[in-house]
Every structure is written in structure tokens, then in C-alpha cells.
Image 1 (cartoon, one colour):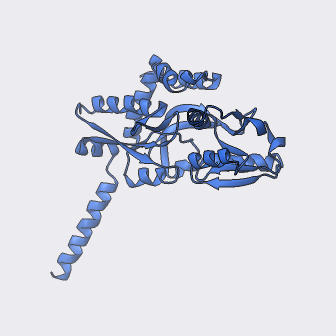
Image 2: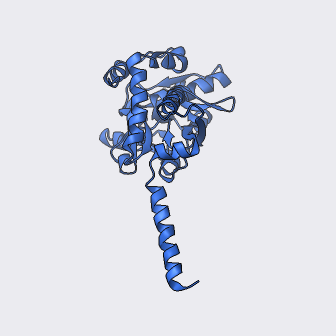
Image 3: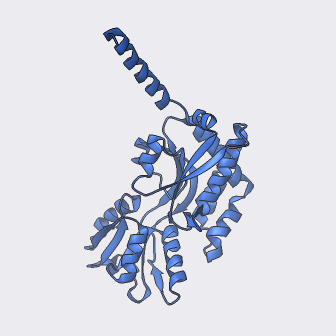
Length: 287
């Protein structure tokens, strides 16, 4: 192979690669006939595994989104493939194209917008502490000298650090791989509290109660952060984001989210907060 031909092949390969990287999500879905949905396995009741299949509030919302995308693209046979992701790898999975959308329990932050984009909000909760009832952590004063577990790579970890500093609390922060690991340490007594988003900690507590009916847990009196959730999509892809937002807005506008909420959250005796109700109303955008 002579030098000019070699150079031309290299240039062609680079252009092909650049074209693929610049391809929109909707085009990839059309080509594959497949929507790849990332979901968390450890964020009950929003996103988890039940009998080996993805389940939860966020998963059900994404099922509605998937059906809507198939309709808008005129792809009735479009396949929805669910790909498990973790708190650590969810961003890379989206950026690299392993998934097209992440439907879990991800908080919207400006820092994260440097790497990914977000849809309309899907849930609103806040950071709090879960502890054993007999050694309840009710507020900042109860945290002094205590060990607090928090999952790494979460917005809760950042908010917890700020909260402890703001309240001049000398607590030992114990970083864990995920909420399941933190919950195990709490139950063993290795830590005094587990920090996390209230709705997800509720799921952890419910799972623990299913395994041991004598277990007894308590939540702190107040939230230490505001956590707006949304689905993650790739940056600079407004066409795909609009398709997803159109489906979410229709769900909120028609009130269909009420049954989804009841199935996964309300059935546990948790009523939607005024803030969450307002979110549904504000984001039920009209066409």
C-alpha cells in the first residue's frame, strides 16, 4: 500500500468515526430498532430488580416513554432493552453510547450538566438520615461523633459534606459502594446512620423489614438537601430530549403518574409531598 492510499484510509476512518459520534440518538434507534434504557438495580422503589426484571416508579415512566418513542418514530416493533447501571458507571454508560437514556434516581445538578443533559423532572425528594429506632438520629446534634455511611459518586455525598460543615458537626463519614452496602453496615452496627435520598432510603428500609419483621428504623426530622430527579440523556441532542419530554409531559398532564406513584410509593403509606404535586402540575406542559 502506498503512502497516499494509507493516508486516505486513515482520514476516511476518522471521518467515519466522527460521523458516528455525531449521530443523533433517534437515528441510532431507527437503525437498531432498539432503545437502550439504563436502570439502577439498587434504588427501590424508583428503580430496582424484582424477580430478575427491572421494576419501579422510574422504570414504569420509562416504559411509557419507550412506547411513545416507538409511536413517534413509527417503529411499532422497536425493542426496549434494559441495561443495569450503577451510581459509578451510569454517566460513562450514557456518554459512551452503551445506553440511550438513564431511568433511575439521578439528581439534576449544574456540574453534571457538563457531561450529560436532563429531561423534565420526574421526582422530587431530599437527603436525610436513616438510623435504627433505638439509637435514632433526629438532627445535627445527634450526629456528633457518630459514623455516617453515604454511597460514593452521589449528590448526597456532596450535600452531606456541606451540611456537616455548615452545622459544625464532627461526624465520621464512611463512604460505601452503594446503598445496599450502607444498609448492611447500618444493620450490623458498623455505622450509626445511612445518608441518602429519602425516597430511596424508604426502599432500603422496606426491604430490610421484609427480611426481618423485628427490624425498626427511623428517619431524621428534616431533609438536608433538595434533590430533583430527572432522566439522563446525552448532551447536544435536543431532538431526542424533546421526544422524551413530550411523553413525560403527557403523562403528567393526564395525571397518569398518579397510578404509577401509588403502585410503587403510595402503597407503602407515603403520600406525595406538596412539592412533588406542584412539580407534576408545572411540568404537564401543553403541546
